[in-house]
Image 1 (cartoon, one colour):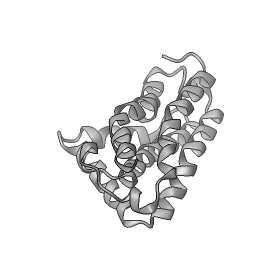
Image 2 (tube, one colour; image 1 turned 90 degrees about the vertical axis):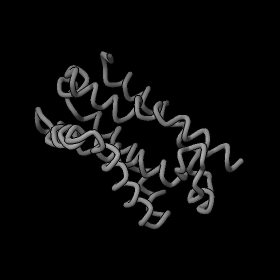
Image 3 (cartoon, helix red, strand yellow; image 1 turned 135 degrees about the vertical axis):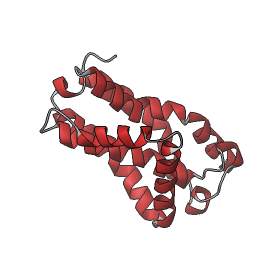
Length: 161
């Protein structure tokens, strides 16, 4: 559990740094599925990270002005709706990122994480760092999520080296 926002933000930034290696891949490399990454490509992994950073960003925007986040409530309900709900949510997002130009995926990948960090600096700590449920949710959508996908990242980067 974090006691201050700065510690969380520093750890989040450091945890995400490894994913920035995806930016060095060519468009062709980004679109190549990698068996050792569960068939995901670099674009897929970028899109997956963006999806949940966008969710956290939406929640941060809400918590900057309100005590509660309808986004958190909505996503938690959707995720828990059925045993395969999370997979369906992720698959729908994957289709979205596969359909958009790779340049747009790259742009979002470069900007969403920073925008999230920026918004979290203006959310009162009482609404996220000192609110255990919200802090746990933000941790799950960022630092913990990055750790969960280190295997896929390593496999994708290894496949193109």
